[in-house]
Image 1: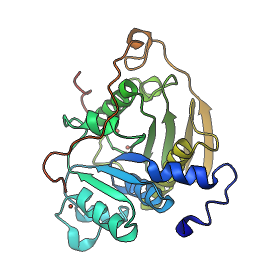
Image 2: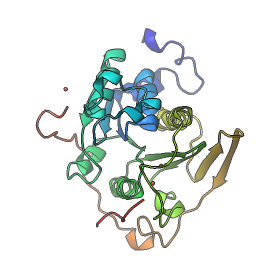
Image 3: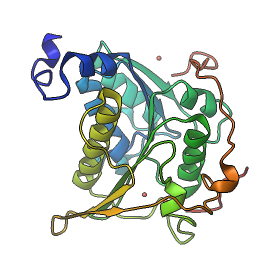
Image 4: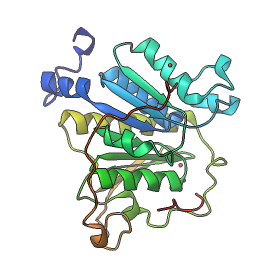
Length: 268
């Protein structure tokens, strides 16, 4: 516990909070600029198990913000590179890497085996997909997004407003691969999302439940807005009050694994 000596003195955290972190599993969907910062600070804080989900290979333009990546790994799966970096710096953390998107049939099992999920994806179809899975399985979800110098953060818990309540239709004009990204902005919202996860797992502090944090680093303007549950929400509204509950279980990876927001809505 010597590694965590400086955080063990936090009021309301202490040994019990650290033990909860060490026993927790957190799924991070997206390990780019935002998700990479989330994963880094969760590992540093002592989260016991990280499940990283991200499709695709590392490209040179990713390197302006994705601090878990290395130039010599261009062309390799990004999630593998992120996992390898975390394992070097935080050898006591178990890291799983899944090179696939959120529509993969194994995703519900991975979500069910997690204590908290972080949505750091860059498109609405996948964001709505993870929102629905977390609602159905009763798993808290931390939503983090950025665009240019702006960012937004929301924590979704069972019974509270969900992502669809706030962004009912998404943004059909959104270009997930064309929006400007500055690494410092992605890192800022990623750190804030990591803090929401830590508070959720360790059970201390006040979370952004029923509140949307929106900020613009252009002029350092930070604001939070109260949000309410939409009774007509297609994901959590009254007509979906009787959602199924799956038994929480550890997912079984296929094979050995690897040792923002647009487009059409997700199919249901």
